[in-house]
Structure formats: C-alpha cells, structure tokens
Image 1 (cartoon, rainbow, N blue to C red):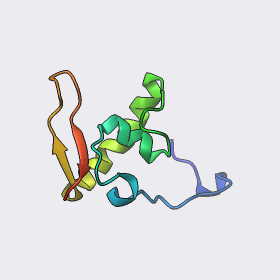
Image 2: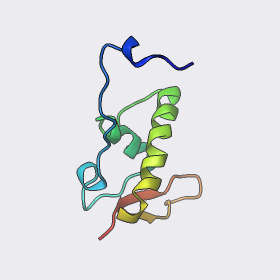
Image 3: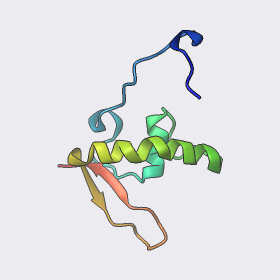
Image 4: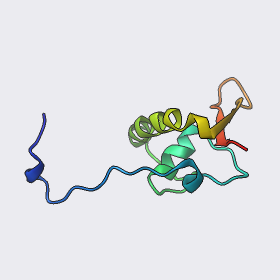
Length: 88
C-alpha cells in the first residue's frame, strides 16, 4: 500500500554504485556476491536465505542495467552460478 512521503522521517537519493566503484578489476563475482557488495557487505558475508533473496532482487537488475560494462564467465559446474566482472 502506498504511503505519503511526509510519513517518512527522511528520504535518500536512490543512487547505486557503478561497476567500477563496486568491483575489483582483477576479480570475478557471482550475483550473490554482487548482491552483498551492493549492500556494503563482504562478498562472503553469511546471510539467511530470505535476506539473500531480497538482495538478489536488487542485484539482478543492477547486473542487467550495467551489462555493457561487465563480462561474464561460465560457472565451474552446472549447479553453480556464473561469474561477472569488469570488461577489459
């Protein structure tokens, strides 16, 4: 249900990191790791499944929106996620 803006104490700009700000040049990341980084967490931070699902809701569109600046690598196994990194 929508809420009036004035019902919130404060609002913030909806700014996201650029790929260059978020990712290291020489590393590749899973979408799960990117989700954590977007929240200021370490890539290997332990999260419960529900929290991880919410973070993925932010990370997947971020990857799609920044796809021109990213490269992708096949997963090491069929049951593992792919990896994303900065394009050279």
